[in-house]
Length: 419
Image (tube, rainbow, N blue to C red; front, top):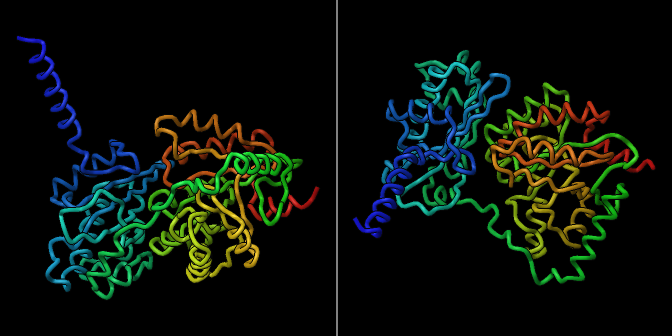
């Protein structure tokens, strides 16, 4: 057998092994396609009951034996010609998923459902926006659900449900448009404004403000560098599965944090935004669509910031006082908009980059964030990173053992004025 033939056979065998070993790859776990035993178990169970065909992703997180499971799925594909059946299709499938998972997985205490409208099997490889979400506690399901009532009536009773306007109106054309995500579609760096001199100037200003702490022109990088206290912040929420688990960890640890939320996600998961306030935390503004503000004209900058302000107030009843630009990208126009609306620009003492860490490198992430603990530090984590959830309890314990207090952002800013 020639060497060429042997190499060809070897390549074919490797390819077959890859394909067969990725038989579960239809289910996307989290953001990096990681397969985990519990997710696989749920998926296989759904497949046994003919419910896996529509599953787009499965996420689970476990804290102290309590498991939150999130299922993202599509609906409407089989009823594109009969819009009256689209809503019923969504409700029927959601009901089947919920009953099966609660009845079959006793340690799942919460199910977070996210439904994405689809009218074709030919889908572009891009993220999609849920046009339906629901968060269901096991206790509520056991106490309020009845077989003789429609599932949407049950969802209305618990109140932790979101339907897009287009879904409620059964406007399929608008529903399709709402299913395309706008997030991160302009994350390019604005090179026209980034000369070497500007880069060094910004670096020097940031270094000075981080080193000295305090508030400078309505902006804060660090609190009082003479007080052993820090604040913990989370970016990019709300998000199914991750938000409730993080809230549970913070509650058990008696820690108050600030969540910089994306406006569109607040609309999609309004109950999580309310949970954040209910648990005594603070909500900050992280723009409407997580865009690079420096690349937008003035009117769109205003809209990204002020529309999110309105959404936060409408859903939580709280006036938002803090803003963090996605990627830390801002300019004078952003500063002026914030100042005119009495909103603090909040950055961070040092960028952690937890979202760049592989999920199996929790120890490296923990060691990295430990090095960021210094008087007045503003720590930034990201919702949606499993490693962050894994290390959070250990990090909180470490901070306290080192003699630091974890204080709300508001107190950190107040103390920054005292020098």
